[in-house]
Amino acid sequence: MIIGDDPILLTPGPLTTSSATRQAMLRDWGSWDAGFNRITGSLCRDLVDIVHGGDTYACVPLQGSGTFSVEAAIGTLVPRDGKVLVPQNGAYCQRILKICKYLGRAHVELKIPEDQVATPAAIEAALERDPSITHVAQVHLETGAGLLNPLREIAAVCQRHGKGLVVDAMSSFGALEIDVRDTPFDALIAASGKCLEGVPGMGFVIARKSLLEASQGNSHSLAMDLHDQYVYMQKTTQWRFTPPTHVVAALRAALDQYLAQGGQAARGARYRRNCETLIAGMAALGFKPFLKPEVQAPVIVTFHAPADSHYDFRTFYEAVRDKGYILYPGKLTTVETFRVGCIGAIDEHEIHNAVDAIARTLETMGVRHIAPQESVG
Image 1: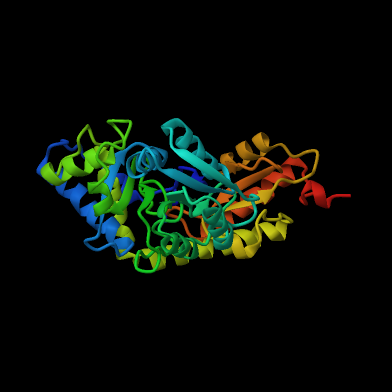
Image 2: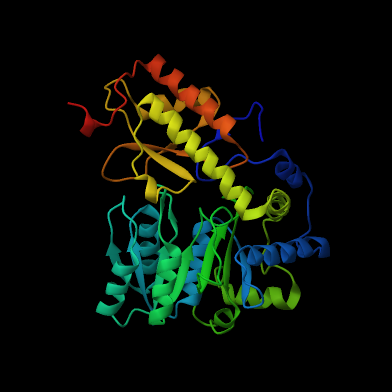
């Protein structure tokens, strides 16, 4: 675990990385170098293996943030005459709707409260109401609140109705189990700087090979055409355009550590311990999580902001940062909140220290009423 002068990032990504991962970025690579291309190839194979994709799926990496790859997946794998159902219970679902609008893809919003999951029954009802829907774009873990949607059950509904499923697994991939053998999907999108504990700069799409091969001409963008990227990489082993070489090398190092530490099961268990430690410690201070325990993912926790008049998020944030921990602002539209991440190269000891830093900050600020506004008389 990282302990040093740098602040600990308690955010949903970028996040705190190990010294070995950062060390991997000290070497420069040529983009056509055979050694670098072998790194790319090994990464793609290992990422497919995490979801047990076998020979049926391929991983297509893409330069940029995770959102770049979400847009690329929708733009490439949803035909131009397709129609996308988006179960919407948070900020990243809203982003998919915005992407569909930019791409000119017909779409349907299924609105769900920010503290409730997208239920298979609601999705099935929406598909039955509108048979013209061809795809469902589902955010697995809505990091706007930290809410976990029931992906396996939603995948079963999509399969039963013959609809394509595009999964935004940005904040769940690598930590929470996703297995194509019981959770079939057309495509899954994630990124380097999340639960794999790499650095930001590379997204990737794990997609059915048959769909990739049949998607030529769908994309409106050259840079985000996954079909073109896939075909070119199959022929040459190279990226089409300048790759994020240092990011790729760091992800290879991070993935080596991930596998050596026990893979998804071990990573998920560590994050769950972090999350449980965080919620217990914050509860002892009087903080209330926004979500109910049964829908809370062990990746990031949203807490109600204190109702105390002395509380100000910017002051609170800067004071906690000065003590070595970087928090994250709230993403909700209905109530004032802030978020604390449980992921990265940290364990429950750092979480204990972070809670202590929060307690000392509140004392210094003179914040005594921790309960949220609706709980204060």
